[in-house]
Length: 205
Image (cartoon, rainbow, N blue to C red):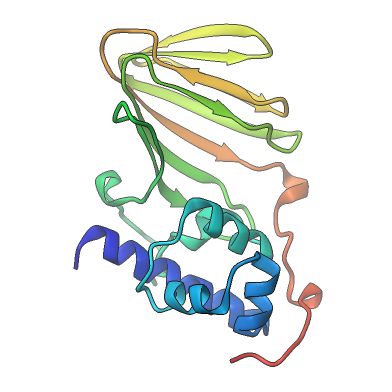
Protein backbone atom coordinates (compact mmCIF):
# COMPACT_ATOMS: atom_id res chain seq x y z
CA UNK A 1 0.00 0.00 0.00
CA UNK A 2 1.33 3.44 -0.91
CA UNK A 3 2.11 5.93 1.86
CA UNK A 4 -0.71 8.25 0.80
CA UNK A 5 -3.20 5.35 0.84
CA UNK A 6 -2.02 4.28 4.31
CA UNK A 7 -2.52 7.80 5.61
CA UNK A 8 -6.03 7.99 4.12
CA UNK A 9 -6.91 4.64 5.71
CA UNK A 10 -5.55 5.75 9.10
CA UNK A 11 -7.42 9.06 8.98
CA UNK A 12 -10.67 7.33 8.00
CA UNK A 13 -10.36 4.72 10.74
CA UNK A 14 -9.62 7.35 13.38
CA UNK A 15 -12.55 9.54 12.36
CA UNK A 16 -14.96 6.61 12.49
CA UNK A 17 -13.61 5.45 15.87
CA UNK A 18 -13.85 8.94 17.37
CA UNK A 19 -17.30 9.51 15.88
CA UNK A 20 -18.67 6.28 17.36
CA UNK A 21 -16.95 6.99 20.67
CA UNK A 22 -18.94 10.23 20.79
CA UNK A 23 -22.18 8.49 19.70
CA UNK A 24 -22.41 10.69 16.60
CA UNK A 25 -24.18 9.66 13.43
CA UNK A 26 -22.63 10.28 10.02
CA UNK A 27 -25.23 12.98 9.43
CA UNK A 28 -24.55 14.55 12.82
CA UNK A 29 -20.80 14.79 12.32
CA UNK A 30 -21.18 15.96 8.72
CA UNK A 31 -23.47 18.77 9.84
CA UNK A 32 -21.14 19.89 12.62
CA UNK A 33 -18.12 19.80 10.30
CA UNK A 34 -19.90 21.58 7.46
CA UNK A 35 -19.42 18.77 4.95
CA UNK A 36 -21.67 16.25 3.24
CA UNK A 37 -22.50 12.75 4.45
CA UNK A 38 -21.23 11.37 1.13
CA UNK A 39 -17.85 13.07 1.61
CA UNK A 40 -17.62 11.82 5.18
CA UNK A 41 -18.40 8.25 4.08
CA UNK A 42 -15.62 8.46 1.47
CA UNK A 43 -13.16 9.75 4.08
CA UNK A 44 -14.06 7.16 6.71
CA UNK A 45 -13.69 4.35 4.17
CA UNK A 46 -10.20 5.59 3.22
CA UNK A 47 -11.23 6.17 -0.38
CA UNK A 48 -10.80 9.96 -0.24
CA UNK A 49 -7.86 12.17 0.69
CA UNK A 50 -9.55 15.05 2.46
CA UNK A 51 -8.21 18.59 2.30
CA UNK A 52 -6.54 20.06 5.38
CA UNK A 53 -9.47 22.47 5.76
CA UNK A 54 -11.96 19.59 5.80
CA UNK A 55 -9.89 17.56 8.27
CA UNK A 56 -9.52 20.63 10.46
CA UNK A 57 -13.30 21.11 10.50
CA UNK A 58 -13.85 17.43 11.33
CA UNK A 59 -11.26 17.60 14.12
CA UNK A 60 -13.00 20.66 15.58
CA UNK A 61 -16.36 18.89 15.41
CA UNK A 62 -14.87 15.89 17.23
CA UNK A 63 -13.15 18.21 19.75
CA UNK A 64 -9.67 16.82 19.08
CA UNK A 65 -6.49 18.29 17.67
CA UNK A 66 -5.86 17.83 13.94
CA UNK A 67 -2.87 15.60 14.62
CA UNK A 68 -5.03 13.08 16.45
CA UNK A 69 -6.67 12.13 13.12
CA UNK A 70 -3.39 11.21 11.43
CA UNK A 71 -1.87 8.90 14.05
CA UNK A 72 -2.29 5.13 13.77
CA UNK A 73 -3.65 3.36 16.84
CA UNK A 74 -0.83 0.95 17.57
CA UNK A 75 -0.60 -1.24 20.68
CA UNK A 76 2.51 -1.37 22.84
CA UNK A 77 4.67 1.06 24.78
CA UNK A 78 6.94 2.00 21.85
CA UNK A 79 6.11 3.48 18.46
CA UNK A 80 8.52 4.19 15.64
CA UNK A 81 7.76 6.37 12.62
CA UNK A 82 9.93 7.33 9.66
CA UNK A 83 9.66 11.07 9.06
CA UNK A 84 9.44 10.38 5.31
CA UNK A 85 6.27 8.32 5.90
CA UNK A 86 4.53 10.99 7.99
CA UNK A 87 1.71 12.99 6.35
CA UNK A 88 2.55 16.34 4.76
CA UNK A 89 0.39 18.94 6.48
CA UNK A 90 1.87 22.03 4.78
CA UNK A 91 3.84 22.68 1.62
CA UNK A 92 4.61 25.47 -0.85
CA UNK A 93 5.52 25.78 -4.52
CA UNK A 94 9.26 25.90 -3.71
CA UNK A 95 9.23 22.33 -2.41
CA UNK A 96 9.12 23.20 1.29
CA UNK A 97 7.07 20.95 3.55
CA UNK A 98 6.07 20.22 7.13
CA UNK A 99 5.31 16.66 8.22
CA UNK A 100 3.38 15.80 11.37
CA UNK A 101 5.42 12.85 12.66
CA UNK A 102 3.97 12.01 16.07
CA UNK A 103 1.29 13.16 18.50
CA UNK A 104 1.47 12.28 22.19
CA UNK A 105 -1.30 10.36 23.95
CA UNK A 106 -4.47 12.12 25.00
CA UNK A 107 -5.04 14.44 26.70
CA UNK A 108 -1.62 16.06 26.13
CA UNK A 109 -1.69 16.30 22.32
CA UNK A 110 1.90 17.53 22.01
CA UNK A 111 2.94 17.35 18.34
CA UNK A 112 6.33 16.47 16.83
CA UNK A 113 6.93 17.99 13.39
CA UNK A 114 9.72 17.67 10.82
CA UNK A 115 10.17 20.76 8.65
CA UNK A 116 12.09 21.44 5.44
CA UNK A 117 12.26 25.03 4.18
CA UNK A 118 13.73 25.76 0.78
CA UNK A 119 15.67 29.02 0.20
CA UNK A 120 13.28 31.98 0.20
CA UNK A 121 10.41 30.04 1.80
CA UNK A 122 8.52 31.38 4.80
CA UNK A 123 5.66 30.17 6.98
CA UNK A 124 3.30 32.51 8.82
CA UNK A 125 1.91 30.75 11.89
CA UNK A 126 -1.46 31.84 13.18
CA UNK A 127 -1.74 32.77 16.86
CA UNK A 128 -2.08 29.82 19.21
CA UNK A 129 -3.89 29.87 22.55
CA UNK A 130 -1.96 31.83 25.18
CA UNK A 131 0.57 29.62 26.93
CA UNK A 132 1.34 27.40 23.95
CA UNK A 133 5.00 26.35 23.82
CA UNK A 134 6.83 25.88 20.51
CA UNK A 135 10.27 24.25 20.67
CA UNK A 136 12.52 24.29 17.59
CA UNK A 137 15.82 22.51 16.92
CA UNK A 138 17.61 23.30 13.64
CA UNK A 139 19.41 20.28 12.19
CA UNK A 140 20.56 21.75 8.87
CA UNK A 141 20.95 25.25 7.41
CA UNK A 142 19.75 28.50 8.97
CA UNK A 143 16.28 29.43 10.20
CA UNK A 144 15.00 32.97 10.78
CA UNK A 145 12.44 32.98 13.60
CA UNK A 146 10.41 36.20 13.99
CA UNK A 147 8.23 36.82 17.03
CA UNK A 148 6.61 40.18 17.84
CA UNK A 149 8.73 41.87 15.18
CA UNK A 150 12.03 40.56 16.58
CA UNK A 151 14.03 38.12 14.44
CA UNK A 152 16.45 35.48 15.71
CA UNK A 153 18.67 33.46 13.38
CA UNK A 154 19.16 29.84 14.39
CA UNK A 155 22.07 27.91 12.90
CA UNK A 156 22.33 24.12 12.77
CA UNK A 157 22.62 22.74 16.29
CA UNK A 158 20.77 25.72 17.79
CA UNK A 159 17.38 25.56 19.50
CA UNK A 160 14.67 28.15 20.04
CA UNK A 161 11.64 28.46 22.33
CA UNK A 162 8.50 30.43 21.46
CA UNK A 163 5.68 31.08 23.91
CA UNK A 164 3.03 31.51 21.26
CA UNK A 165 0.03 33.75 21.55
CA UNK A 166 0.58 36.33 18.83
CA UNK A 167 1.77 34.14 15.96
CA UNK A 168 5.25 33.90 14.49
CA UNK A 169 7.12 33.62 11.18
CA UNK A 170 9.61 30.91 10.20
CA UNK A 171 11.73 31.71 7.14
CA UNK A 172 14.81 30.54 5.30
CA UNK A 173 16.89 33.57 4.23
CA UNK A 174 19.90 31.51 3.12
CA UNK A 175 20.85 29.88 -0.19
CA UNK A 176 20.74 26.34 1.19
CA UNK A 177 17.70 24.48 2.49
CA UNK A 178 16.94 24.48 6.20
CA UNK A 179 15.68 21.49 8.18
CA UNK A 180 14.41 21.55 11.73
CA UNK A 181 12.33 19.67 14.26
CA UNK A 182 9.42 21.48 15.91
CA UNK A 183 7.49 20.41 19.01
CA UNK A 184 4.11 22.07 19.57
CA UNK A 185 2.84 21.83 23.16
CA UNK A 186 -0.66 23.19 23.91
CA UNK A 187 -1.34 25.02 27.18
CA UNK A 188 -2.56 22.87 30.05
CA UNK A 189 -5.98 24.58 29.98
CA UNK A 190 -6.56 23.37 26.39
CA UNK A 191 -5.72 19.72 27.05
CA UNK A 192 -8.36 17.09 27.51
CA UNK A 193 -11.12 19.34 26.16
CA UNK A 194 -13.21 16.31 25.24
CA UNK A 195 -14.72 14.09 27.91
CA UNK A 196 -17.34 11.39 27.57
CA UNK A 197 -19.57 13.35 29.94
CA UNK A 198 -19.53 16.29 27.53
CA UNK A 199 -20.50 14.25 24.47
CA UNK A 200 -23.97 14.76 23.11
CA UNK A 201 -25.67 11.37 22.77
CA UNK A 202 -27.43 10.37 19.58
CA UNK A 203 -27.88 7.20 17.58
CA UNK A 204 -24.64 6.15 15.89
CA UNK A 205 -24.49 4.38 12.55
